[in-house]
Image (cartoon, rainbow, N blue to C red; front, top):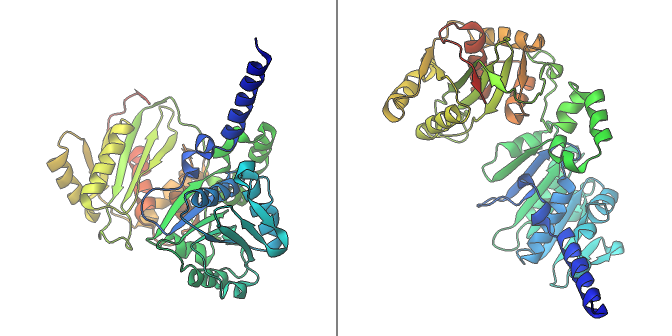
Length: 413
């Protein structure tokens, strides 16, 4: 073969490999891709090793390439962390940028400059007053949950985000129950992405993952730092951290139910409609299979519940008749007349009903087939009355463990 053709072929393969290395769309998981739709703040709450830093850097890179931002704030707890993690780190802005992008880094000025004129400048949350004066159309905040002056830095940044028609923020952080994090979880303009260390298992050493499982399973460290849960420190709650065990879904189950706790109001700032799917095997072990809860209209939540019923091939849908259960029965009869329904009636308080369910967890008779962040946060934080997700969970498991109204059957899932 002609020498020059061989050389040209090798060069093309090399160039293709290099381009693939910097093709984020080809490598990113769904939870790492910029959400669609109108939003102002993208909050990524995830465990260590999830790929948060890479996601933050790639998002800024994408916005620059699309020319949707020109003045970017890089905000970290300390300037040293901004430099070592967000800019110079293994997953920072310099590492994710291809050489041909010709990004210029000026350490003395704490800034990056792209050929298109876009500029990113680093700031420390320990000096929030430095954010007075500058203006931005985008920002990346890393590890917000550990900021000592989080509210002050946040307020100053919000005042500075006043360029362009749609200034946006991406926040990458391991969660903690700080007032600001809890405030962001309730905002309508925030898109939330949840994740665990295990989501990125294919890119992490097996020995590292085994060490994490051996040393930290069931601990507060695992709940917060690995599973990405926002955990309140409530020692009087019914559930403790080591009571929630995660396990893969079994091959067969004897019964599966979908429990609904309807919200009284459809307003977004009110309680959610709890929709939880749970099953039991023929050995009497309980499995929480799914949490489909959310803010829905009546038509939306009944369709969501029926979709969960069909997806998990459940036996029936159950709901408490003295808390909207009559509405569940009416909607099912009108829209889905062939779906089996079982009404349950509460004769005791929510907490009294929950106590035997918590005891099942303590006895290791219930496991979760997946990390259900919001449900588990409620379980581990609540010492008072139950609501929405938790009440649906209690009814689902109560029906499986303490009700004889359904005939067990074996099904493969």
